[in-house]
Amino acid sequence: MAADRPRLLFVTDLAYPAKGRRYCAEDIFLTSRLREDFDLALCHPLDAPALMDCPGFDAAVVRNSGPVLHHQAAYDDFRDRATGRGVPVCTQLTGKGDQAGKQYLVDLTAQGFPVIPTVDRPEDLGLLPEAAAYVVKPKFGADSIGLEFVPRERLRTLTYDDGPGVLVQPRIDFRYEVSFYYVDHTFQYALYAPRPDRRWHLERYEPTPADLDFAARFIDWNDIDHGIQRVDACRAPDGGLLLVELEDLNPYLSLDLLDDATRDSFVASFKASLHRLLGRA
Image (tube, rainbow, N blue to C red; front, top):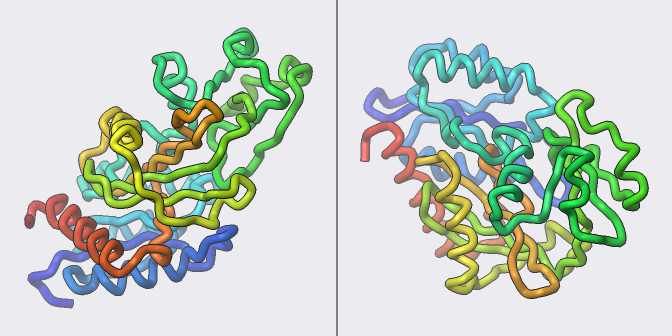
């Protein structure tokens, strides 16, 4: 490795079987482009804590590492070591979105943000609109793990305070889902799923100024100066957008669906962000 080039520990699970996505292909492509500017070492998330003790890495990059709940102890150890040693991490570890679980959906609902109405206590069920069914999911879930649909009469029978707890939302008959992708605070591109039943069959989406104002509101709310974030939203029956998820940990980027110019622009933005993170911009 060249001594004058920054060295990155790139955390990824190339074998994770993500439904509808090829984690390994995306990270193989991304690392092939990052090698133009950086020296890289790839590692599995279970190996990341121990490798944080190895000298020579200037920063760690967490990418398609799979749901943290599959390796929570190792991830917590990784965060503790990175923070304790002052190692920069991309994406920055101060995020208030999915990095910290799903509590933000409850908090943003209470603050009047345009999110799918979300509560986590039985005494707040009356705040939810009437719906044919309700979505119940764990606060620290991912990839729809633990998600179920229940009728309203079952909501009072749920256990809300067992472990990390659960969230309750109305099941919305939305028109489509759309995702906005950011590097730092700069919008990169948007993709959408025209069919609600095929979440990862995505197409390019041209956002309106109102769409971008919606997404930027959540980017500005989050405590992240550097890194990659994905704002997932649904188009409600009334035409407005509602936040589904603010993915600020390891968002899949669907880079294979982009044209060459957009993909190259994203890579250039990501490289520039990493250089700024390392104080080399």
